Each structure stands twice: as C-alpha cells, then as structure tokens.
Image (cartoon, rainbow, N blue to C red; front, side, top):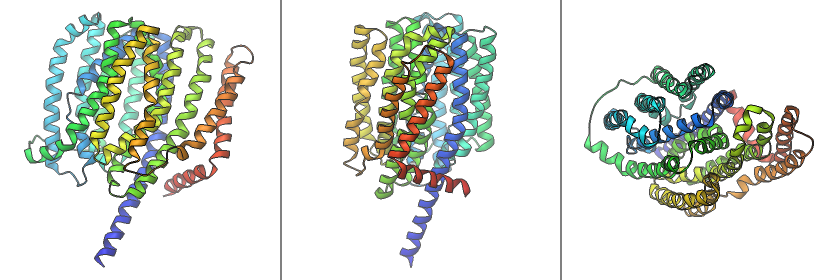
Length: 492
C-alpha cells in the first residue's frame, strides 16, 4: 500500500513538473516574444539615431559591469534552485546576507573607481557616469534574487517574466525618447536606472519576501558544495566573453567594438528569445527529474527539437535576408562592415542550441565539474584563438573564433551520452534539413532583382514559408506531438 502511494505521489509530482514546465515555456516564449519585438524595434531605432562609437561605449561598459557582477555571487542562488530538498527560510536568508555583502562591497569599489576605469578606456564624463549608473542598477538588481529563486524553484515562470516585460517597456521608452532628443551616451544611463527600479518593485509585488539577515554556517557549507564549482564555471564564462570584450576594447578601435556588439546582438537574438527561456525552465525542471533518467532523456530530446526548430531558421534569416535590410535603409549602411561577423555569430547560435542544454543537464545532475572542465577548454580556446584571428583579419576574427569554437558542441554531446543515452541528430534532423533547403532557396531568390523593401519582405516570406513546409514534411510527427501538448496545457 505504501509503495502504491509513493508511486502515485511520484506520478503526481511528475505531472506537475510537466505541466508547469510546458506552461512555463509557453508563458516565457509568448511574453518574451513581446519583449523581443519591442527590443527589436528599439535596437533598430537606436542604431539609426546613435553612431557605432556610442554603442561601443555601452557594450564596453556593460562588459565591465558583467565582469564585476560575477564576484557578487558564489553560486548560492543556483545551489538553491538545484537543491533536491525544499530550501528553508534560513537558506534564503543566508544566501541573501552573503550575496548582498559581496554586492555592496563590489559596488562601492566600482563606483569610486569609475573615473580610473574610464580613464583606462579613454571614456569621457558621460561614459564614466554611465558606468556609475550601471553599478547602481546592478545593486538594485541584486535585491531581486531571492524572490526570483522562489518563483523559479516553483516553476512559476509565468509570473517571473512579468517584471522583465515591465523592465523592457520602461527601458525602451526612456532610451528611445532620450536618443531622439540627442542625449547620446546618457540615453543608456537614465534608461538602465529606470529599468532597475521598476523591475525591483514589480518582483516584490508578485513574490513578496520579507528581507532578513542571517548567517548559518551549516546551511552555507551544504550549498557551497554545488555553488562554488557552479560559480567558477560562470566566472570562466565571464572571462571567456565579457572580459575578452573588455580586453578587445584596448586593441581595437571603439567603433570596431560597436560592430562586434551590433553583430552579437542581432545574431544572438534568437537565443535570447527562445533558448534563454527554455534553459531557464530546463535547469530547475531537469533538477527535479535528476533521479528519473527515462523522462530526463525525453525532456532533453524535446528541448533539442524545440530549440533547433526555432533557432535554425532564424540563423538562415540572419545570413540570407538581414543583409538586404542594411542595403535598403541609407542610415543603416554604416553597419555594413558588421555583416560578416553577423553571419559567423549566427553559426555560433546554431551550435549553442545543442551545447547549452547539455551543459544545463550536467549542472542539473550535479556533474558541475564536467561543465567546469568544458568551460576551461572554451576559455583557453577563446583567449588563444581570438587574438590570433583578430591580428590576421581584424575585428571579424572575434566572430570567426566564436564560430570555430562553437563546433565543439559535438564533443559535448559525446561526453553527455555516457550519463544519459539520448539522440541529438534524430531530434534536430527535420529542422536541420528544412533549414538547409530554405537557405538554398532564399539565397537563390536573393540574387534576383535590385534592392527594395518589397524584395526584403518577399525574401523573408520565402524563407519562412519554405522552412515551415519542409519542416512539416520532414517532421510531421514531432510537430503534431508538440502542438497537442501545448494545446492541452492551454486548455487546462
């Protein structure tokens, strides 16, 4: 009798995980699609009103802040999400106390050293003021950690995304108004502060938590077993990406950093829209399923299919259709030097849709050391290969190195199969072949006629429609299954 009750309880828990995971994906993707549409329009308008140098300063300063932010956490937030047992209030208060102590220390140091950092990168007064504003916004954002963790553990991503929608609307509205009025770099300064304050208010309305200060060595030791390797892994990711971009700011012109930032932003837009949302859900969901390898395998394969179905065609659009937009709009032609980097970063995006879910799987299983070793490899490869390629071919070497290193996703999959027997190729086969066929058709169509807005829209439609047709022909069974699952959750 007890065994039957235990099995029933497990089935109910599994059904709850499935339901909240699916509804979470639907909520995040649908609502962040709205966010991405706003960001898309905003990015387009800002790149019209602002020049590459201003964008270069913003991306450079953001990279510096991202570097500093990784010293504010020792992986405790992720440890709370991954923890098998339900965290206690002492767990939450201990994490909050330690994190805020680190954040406050870092923020005070960064705020008062901002003039020296600005001098190092030859930033003017507005650039230094932007750096200080981002420091303040970083502190404000840290106060959201515990409410966010509580929602994430409960898989309530439908609520978690609401503050992000509000932040996007506020940031977009403020930055667009100020850019049009000619505020220059100060556009981003005021926008990031407004975004941070509104997001903080929203998260505490949705997930109230009484801030408490407490320190428990017992709780801390348990969390650090996972937290320290996780944070070291994240820190290496920071060294690989943001710190290298900060380094590149010393060896490349600031306009080149602007081109790199422009190309990255557009190429990784599909990742921000789809993969980030799916990954946010898969880590806590995989963590809840870490003892159930059969369902974990199914969940991983469905993740591969969902990501490849959305990201592969987006990569095709970026490579074949987006360059025509640059040629159509006169004020957008200043970004033409970034098109090669755009295509290379888009290749990185395609491979990331495979490697990122797998590293998430390692973390959820507690195999954090494997993720750490992979990140060490990627970091060493980036710092070795990228400077060499930049020296050889200029700023496009940054994106070329990124594309080459991303191919290691194949090795990552081979390692993961030692723990979970999943299939990658069969999961991504139909989106991959549909994207290849769509790429060929769109590329050929792009050679016909001159440049015009009508041609751009036509190419976009050709690419999208041809992909959907081929994807349905090649992967009809998977698409119908996915549609049925999502439709069922919407009805419930």
